[in-house]
Length: 99
Image (cartoon, rainbow, N blue to C red; front, side):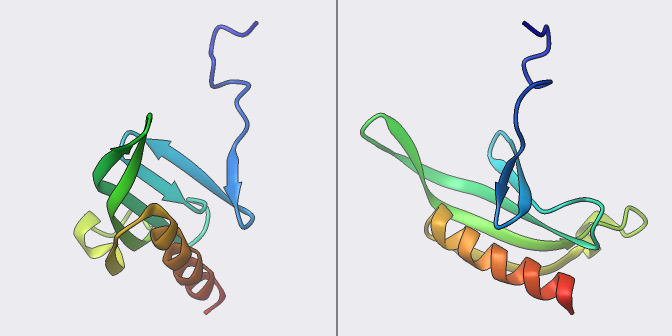
């Protein structure tokens, strides 16, 4: 058994791109690409024994470290569920990386 539990953890992917979670933030895409999506769960509610997002901020961001963090935001939206947020995120990221 490994001392580091994340060492053997598989990377979660959605539509061929990696998803990484840290607390209420989810990053979608690769930092090696020009753009990445940041999803921030702002509100959630308990449904049975699970927390479900009810307000999610979606941001299409540049990954360039030389650009100030506030200037990295290309697009921003707010959605009422994580599903809706991921739907928008996938379209925005695909279009940004192709164009």
